[in-house]
Amino acid sequence: MAQIHCRKCDKDADPITDNLFMGKLEAEVKQKVCQTCWNEWAGPGGTKTMVINEYQLNLGDENARETLKKQMRTFLKLDDATEEFKDYRH
Image (tube, rainbow, N blue to C red):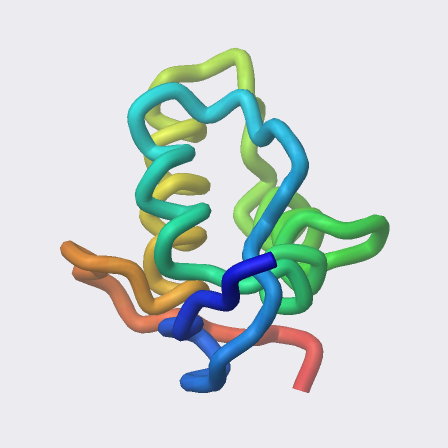
């Protein structure tokens, strides 16, 4: 399996192999983020859960989904990350 250079951890690592069901954003995430960093974001009890809880996001609301997407882009250090990521766990 070919490795990718992960933007988040700045290392060569295994790519994401799971389907993410993210539409157009999925290709970018798979090209630029390794499996380990993705698990840190989306895994059980991961950072995604922390963001949803801290911001009290209702994912049925379009603005809440956009906030979550912006926080994900910032956390994973993807292009067009416009916000600073605040990790409330530390």
